[in-house]
Image 1 (cartoon, rainbow, N blue to C red):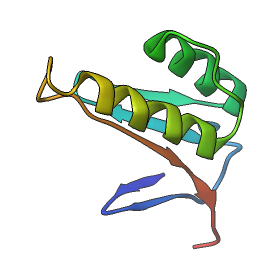
Image 2: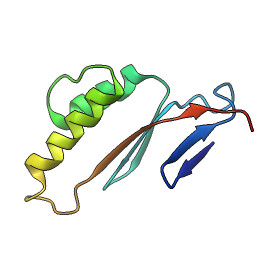
Image 3: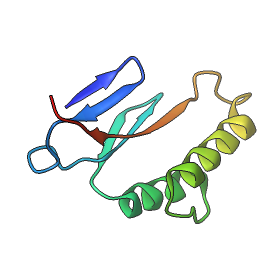
Length: 86
């Protein structure tokens, strides 16, 4: 599994089942399914979030925009791992 510099890849979802990654100002979270990720993000933003990468990213972006004055360190970065052959 490789992440960083905007590259999120793995050579095996069998050995590295996490397909989604949420980086935040507080912690890192890994998720095996988009449903798990959407449920977690729904708790953060305080409303139900659709189960898609774009919906999760949009919800997090709006949340940051609404709360960045209260917490200037606030950020979220959501990514999907891609399986590649090395």
